[in-house]
Structures are given as structure tokens and as C-alpha cells.
Amino acid sequence: MQDDEIRAVTAALRRSPRSPGLASEGYFQHEAAVVESRSVGPGTRIWAFTHILPERSFGADCNLCDHTFIENDVRIGDRVTLKGCIQVWDGITLEDDVFVGPASRSRRAAARW
Image 1: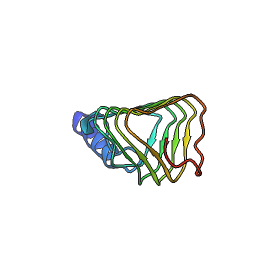
Image 2 (image 1 turned 90 degrees about the horizontal axis):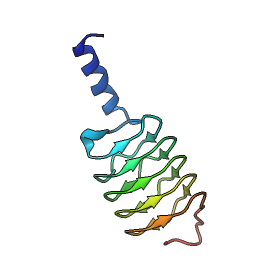
Image 3 (image 1 turned 30 degrees about the vertical axis):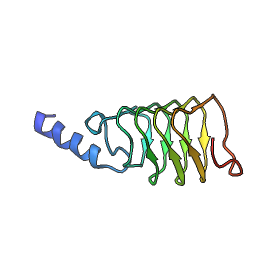
Image 4 (image 1 turned 45 degrees about the vertical axis):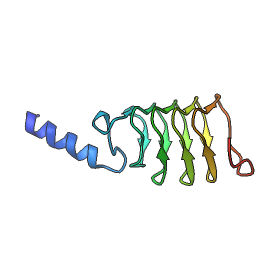
């Protein structure tokens, strides 16, 4: 591929809903992550096999580890860490500075952590 072809493909990938932003948007997204949300805070790190649905917003400096799933009606504050194999379902709010350990599951009845 020529340089201009590579730039065109890279620009198209950045516009894709499955890859809305990479380092140019102020956050890191692993190539195996699916990030449908366009509202990811600066400094956030999204690791492999994480799937984030489109209506999510994140604060700054979050760390979303491998195999994390985040549904639509979820709010996540600043400096939140979600370790591996986390599922966060609709109706959950994670305030600033929350740490959720590996393989935790959220319940709709517990609306705030």
C-alpha cells in the first residue's frame, strides 16, 4: 500500500462506529476491543475483548481490563478500574475512584457502588 492509501484506511477506521477513536481521541483502545461509545474520557485505557455499547459515557483516567462488557444505561466516573471479566448492566452508576475486582457482576437492585 502507498502512504496515501494507508492514511485513507486509517481515517476510515477512526470514523467507524466500532473504532471511534484511538490515541488521537485522548484514550487508548486495544485493537481487539469493541468500543461503540463516542464518549470516552481522556486517559482511559480499554483493553482486549472489552465491549462497550454505544450510549455509554466514561470519565477520565479509567482502566477497563480484558473481557469487560458495559451495557447502555451505565454511568462511569473518573479514575474507575474494572478488572477482568466484569459485566456492568443497565441502571448501574460507578462513582469516581471505584475499583471493581475480577469477575464481579453488577445487579440491577444495587444501583450505586
